[in-house]
Length: 138
Image 1: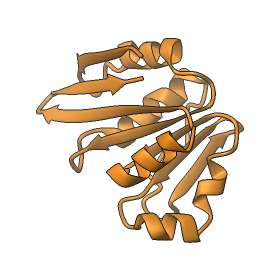
Image 2: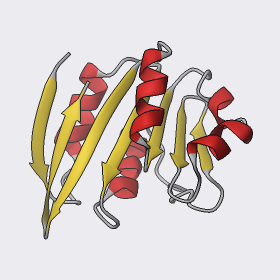
Image 3: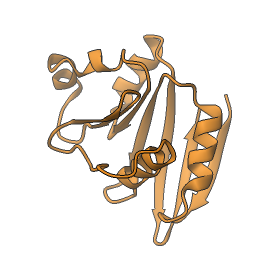
């Protein structure tokens, strides 16, 4: 599995989206971790734009899930526990074909989904002012 660290500004995410398009299979859960305001939703927006989706990318903090196309889904688990995630049936959405971008994943959820046989990738974002480091594990 390739891993890579890319340093970029929030306005220059093309290198990251190109890397992801090259190395991530079409049916993958992508875990996005980082501090508040580190740029997780901005990266989701760049991924959507790279896939031809220009408008409508917002953080699903209160809706928990946004569907941008038939193969791009976005989740925000900041406010819910793993138990709630399963009780609400959100795990069933992960069986749909496409990329599933999950902000604020819990380590136990990541481990469970990886061990359950899902294709997974992880991106950890560290904020350094105008620049961010994106640690990508595919």
